[in-house]
Length: 216
Ligand code: B12
Image 1: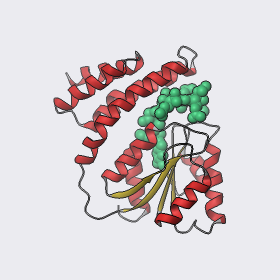
Image 2: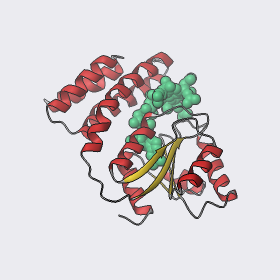
Image 3: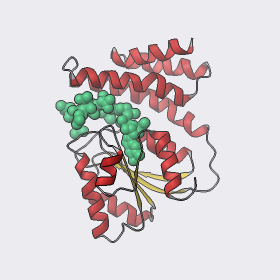
Image 4: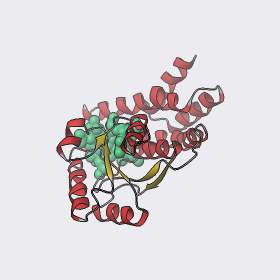
């Protein structure tokens, strides 16, 4: 039964039916399926298939947009549920997060932001297409001790390096631990650009962030 709803959720994104994605998410929550399982086992496989079909030339940009719409509708429902399931006592740290300049992919970044905030971090989400100056200004303003940067395109990953350089130049590099992520980002890329860590997914990001501030 649960596997069945996961498959249907995956198909709703692949078939470009955002209303079905929303309805199935509602159904899954109502029947007690954990929100993180809905994301991991239902929605993310759908986005992966859509991405693959796009890369192979079978799907086009409108297909990506419709799938993203379905995922976002589902996430709007899931985010409050994710938050409600975690209790935070003291702030684990202050995080500034955003998707780098030139890149408008927001779903993964927002999921990481939600999970960090659900796990006790104070999170300032700058959204997408964030310039290095905006990252720097927000870190100065908030006294953040973690910076999270998302990049989904091989052409925008390089912005992560630029922001790290700018942090150095602004004398902020010692104050903030830098975490990078996004589909094309790897551990070796993180090392190459001098980031402190990388995580493959939102739960990994929470674990790594806690480690970076000595709370894990
Ligand atoms: C949805 C989507 C879009 C939507 C985005 C809508 C939105 N509001 O976000 C739209 C339609 C706008 C879009 C546009 C484009 N896209 Co697009 N898109 C995707 C798609 C299908 C899914 C991305 C997604 O949301 N995944 C689900 C989330 C939950 O996963 P995630 O983002 O990977 O995030 C997880 C981890 O990476 C990690 N993570 C993410 N961020 C961070 C940050 C930190 C700090 C940490 C620690 C971890 C972390 O944790 C997250 C949660 O688990 C991917 C394919 C794919 N499978 O990735 C292509 C993909 C990323 N897009 C691609 C392309 C080419 C484009 C366009 C250039 C297409 C075009 N010709 O215009 C444009 C670029 C626009 C721009 N300037 O940014 C390519 C990139 C190829 C490359 N290697 O560079 C991909 C890989 C598709 C493909 N296979 O070809 N896209």
